[in-house]
Image (cartoon, rainbow, N blue to C red):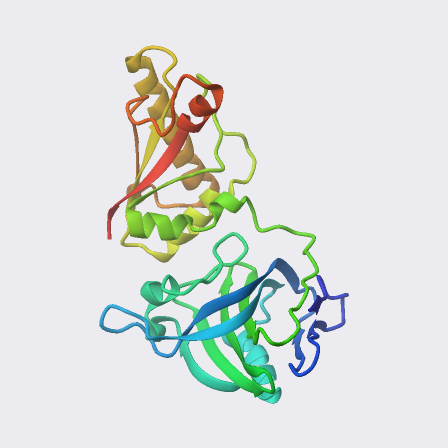
Amino acid sequence: MTLARRAPRGLPCLILCLLAQPAAALELAWPEDAERVLSRSETTVAYPLATGGFADGAVPLSSGDGTLVEEVWQVPGAPGDTETLFALLRDQLAAQGYEIGFTCADTACGGFDFRYALPIAEGPAMHVDLGDFRYISASRPTAAGAEHVALTVSHGGELGYAHLAWIVPTEAAAPSVVPSTRVSGDPSDGGLIARLTTEGHAVLEDLAFDTGASALSDQRYDSLVTLADWLAENPDRRIVLVGHTDAEGALESNVALSRARAAAVRDALVTGLGADPARIEAAGVGYLAPRAANNLPEGREANRRVEVVLISG
């Protein structure tokens, strides 16, 4: 699979998915300045494809079996709105012989429950506005077996977002993906919201604190961007940020330090990312909840952390 990373100004951007026969090529023309920000492939997968909206506690699924090619594209200006970008891509799929199996829009899909029932990439690479997204699953026959596509399109701020999963038969030649020049953030950020909503808590892994320090640097933390986006999309949810320390020093001072760490993260969410302060509390437990032994430097570093805990919704 040969992929254009960014379209030259004034020209369309083409994804040219070139497979050895018998699989056919997939060609998608993107608006100018579209940028591929996530790219990966995986062999021998059973990829879930939605066949209906969320109902009776679940999203009905079928399976696309084969080699997965996954991409996330960001489109400045979007162009126009979610529906315009979605229609642009949907019509190209139809023109290349893909038959639509299921399509839906935001709340009709099932909102939050639909979005997190599917392996759609998370922020900051992919943003899904739960009140403004489109989904489609489609397939087409080839000599080697069925090809499948799952496409999710949304919009946020000045960007349009598109997540494309393409599953080709394993009998076809496996596509190769040209790495993107832009990465989607620390790998530890992947699955943050899934862990928070299924387990009730998650560590903000990309934050780092020195012994005795509570300040965060001014850098962009992908976990905080993801968390702020999720809070904005889920106004009924409330969280507590819980600070932790290593075991150096007295308990009382460490509890105060852990509270200061949680407060620093809360301030970054509220002041830097516009999160609602009424829905975010900050607390600290010092060294009373370690996740590693404190007798080694790497254990103490792991224990200096802030964790987000879901408390309602």
